[in-house]
Each structure stands twice: as C-alpha cells, then as structure tokens.
Image (tube, rainbow, N blue to C red; front, side, top):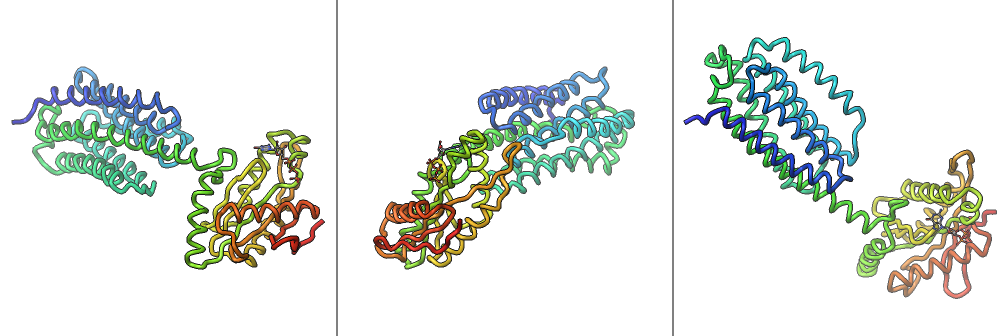
Amino acid sequence: MTPDISTLMLVLALTTVISVVGLLVASFLNRQIVAIRYWAGGLTVFIPGLLWQVFSPPLPLWISAVIITQAYFILWWGTRCYRFGQAQPQFFKVMLLLCLIQGSAFFAFQDSLRISIMIHSAVVVGACLVTMLEAVLMRLRQRALLLAWVVLWGAHATVYCRRFLLYALDPAYAEVTSMHAASSVEAVNYLEGIAFIYGFSLICFIFTTLRLQQALRRQATRDPLTDLLNRRAFEETSTRLLAQARRFRRPLSVLLMDLDRFKSINDQHGHKAGDLVLQAFAGHLGRHLRATDLSCRYGGEEFVVLLPDTDLAQARELSERVREAWQRVPLDIGTTNLAATVSIGLASVAQGDAHVLDDLIERADHALYRAKQLGRNRSHVWQEGLRLASFENVV
Ligand SMILES: Nc1nc2c(ncn2[C@@H]2O[C@H](COP(=O)(O)OP(=O)(O)OP(=O)(O)O)[C@@H](O)[C@H]2O)c(=O)[nH]1
C-alpha cells in the first residue's frame, strides 16, 4: 500500500515545523553558536517550500524547488560556520548567485516535471555531499557523531540519487506530469525526509551541546586575553609532567618571564595598548615553543613556560632566543611603534631537590628577581645560595 502523497507532504511539513521550533529556541538560548541559527533558518525555509508543494497546482512547482534547494544551501552554510567556529562572509552573495542559477534552470524546465525533478535531485545530492564533507573536514574527535552525520546525509543523498536515476532511466517515469502519478518513488522520499528532519535536528542539538562544552572547557583553562593556559590548568598539567620527569629521570626546565617596565607602557600608552603588548608576547612565545611545551599567563605581565625533556643548557638557549627576538618585535600600538623587553628566570629539575612545582617556580622567581636587579632585559639561572649566574648582559 502506498501512502497518500499529500498526507506525507503535510506530515513532513509538520515534522519540519516542530524541529524548527526546537532549533529556534536552542539558537535563542545559545546565541554565541552561529551555526544553529543557520540550521534553524534552513529548516524554516523548507516549510514554505513544502507547503508550496502541498498546494500546487495552482502555484507553479518550480518556485517550490528553488525555495527547497536554498534551504539545503543554508543548512550547508551553517555546517561551514560550525567548522570554522564563526560566521562566514559572503552568505547573501553566494545565496543570491545560487538562487539565480537554480531559479533559471528550474524556470527553463518547468514544463517537464521529469527534468525538474532530475535537476532538483542532483542539487540535493550535491548539497548532501558538501555538507557531509564539512563534517569530515572538522576532524571531529567524536567518531560516533561524525558517523551519524555521514549516515544521515549519505542516506538522504542515496534516496535522491535513486530518484534521479529512476526519472532519468525508467520509462515509467518519463511521462509523469504530477508527483501523485509517481507516488511509489515520491513516498520513499517523503518518508525518508521525515526521518531526516528528526535526525538532523537531533544531531544539531548534539553539535551545539558539544560546542558549548568546548567553550566552557576553554573558559575554565585559558586566559581570555592571551589564550594561553591559565594558572590552574598550567599547574594541573605541569604537576603531572614534573612527576613523570622525576619518575623517568628526564630533564625538565621552567622559565618565568616578566615584561620590563610594563607599568610605564600602560601609563604612557593606555591600558588597551598594554593588553595588545601582552597578546603580542603570547603570540611571540607561541612562535618559539614546541607543541609539547606549556605556556601560561601566570599573573598580570608575568608568564611561565614549562619545558619537558629540556635540560638547563637547552632552556638557556631558548630563553635567550625568546628574549633577544622580543626586543626586536615591532609593537604597533595605534599611532606609535614601541619596543619592549623581557626578563627571564630559569630553573631546572636537574638542579637538586625541587620536588614540587612550587619549588621550581620559586627558584625561577628568585632568578627572575635577580635578572631585574641586574638591569632587566636578561635571562638568569637559579643557583644555590647567592651564587646567581648571569649568562647574558644586555644593556
Ligand atoms: N594592560 C594591562 N596591564 C596589566 C594587566 N595586568 C597587570 N597589568 C599591569 O602591569 C603593571 C605591572 O607593573 P609592575 O609590577 O610595577 O612592574 P613593571 O612596571 O613591569 O616593572 P618591572 O617588572 O620591575 O620591570 C601594573 O601597572 C598592572 O596594572 C593586564 O591584564 N593588562
């Protein structure tokens, strides 16, 4: 028994309305997630397209095809925004362009339902493939979610591919003049469409929750100004790395860095300029460190770097590279260009009985204090007692 096409169209439209309401509420509650706005918007655009189908004729069917294919475009664009984590430019331009191209094609072939359906099916298959590809390019760690997305869009593409082939090759569909006349193939499409809309909105909710979790984790572990680790996250990871270094007798060093005369930068150029300098220094660190090193904004203008598998000599070398290069980094603060310097204190686990992270950092702090005393813009290694050695003297 083949279900009545008009009933299926209405059920699909109602399913879409229910999903749209859910997604609109979710997008209102999670305004920072741009993608869900597009997903909600895309599904919303399906509704007039589907209703148009229900009430045509007398309405021309080709307009419904244009509306529905735009809805797929918006869903893809939402997925793209999700991949990049922000709104993507040129949305309306691309949409207008596609609208014109597809609209012209549908308009030109409006007298042949067969050709119109073939074009529509081919566009949907293309949309499914690019939307699937976006998720693959995201390199999601949640394999099950990726699989669910690929299966959902893959099934949708398969159904439309079958539709395309039937209309292209099967003589039974060559002369059809209404969807009701081809109800056996159209019924499958509508039934799958209902499952697709439910599945799609469910996965959108999961994607949104995942992004919110990631944002929360980031907020809990990162300094918002520099995006380096915050102190708590740094201490948690460093404590583990220090224990491993001791257990496997591996070298490990710590650099404590403090920007010189930072107060005067703030006083002369303003707090905003000071913030830019802090961000520039964080970027500078990122360019000099390995992926396995940990860097953290430890306090106001103080930074700490933990270097696993790095002995004192290598740490010295790196410290000097960072310090030397920093004084040459041009800091473009509004209308002025200024140069800043940094003082660095070093300590290493190889230097005796620093058993806990606090001990190591305290030693690096003593060395840093000495570097400041000796005139700033220099690196200093912690040594027992007063035997503090300056290995670089820079004016
Ligand atoms: N712009 C900005 N300034 C900050 C921030 N956190 C701390 N500061 C400022 O950093 C300055 C630190 O000044 P001091 O501790 O006197 O040190 P300094 O001027 O760098 O001098 P030395 O360390 O002795 O070379 C203070 O003026 C703080 O207000 C921040 O997030 N943004």
